[in-house]
Length: 199
Image 1 (spheres, rainbow, N blue to C red):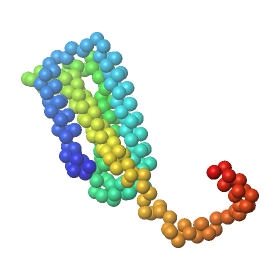
Image 2: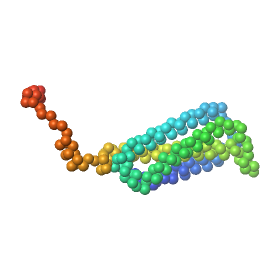
Image 3: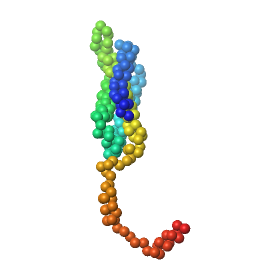
Image 4: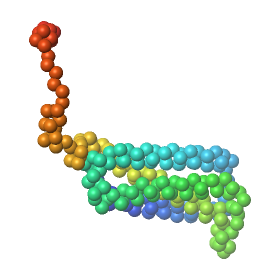
């Protein structure tokens, strides 16, 4: 699992940058807004909200199995900080992405403002490309942490269910509890009735 985490450290950022650069080349400087663009933005905000909610549930699951041997190993290892960053990346980028998505509702106001006059690059194009970068980074980083959570939960189910050594009952204490527990004598008549039912 940890080798896989090493490989997955930077790929959401690099892949998002490549996609954003491709769109920067493809998208024309003068943007034509489609008719149903507002509906698309509303659907995007809804989708981001659902993913953020799912990440919150995944974080709750991690906290609920924190006292297991597997999680004690993860939190005692250097991967604890990386796992925290893997959760922070999609959550922070998701909230920023929502802000940029809301700003796109008003793209008609600022879409034709020039940034680089010679290249004819407009504000609308830069905001749109930045939004594409944030959206793709949010999706890829969310997939990364969801995949890791699935590995933690399902790869070794016995480890997640096993009680850690700190919570195990000492054998001496267990015998003491057995001695102190109340003992009830069963009458011979009741024993005979039970024996007949078993037969």
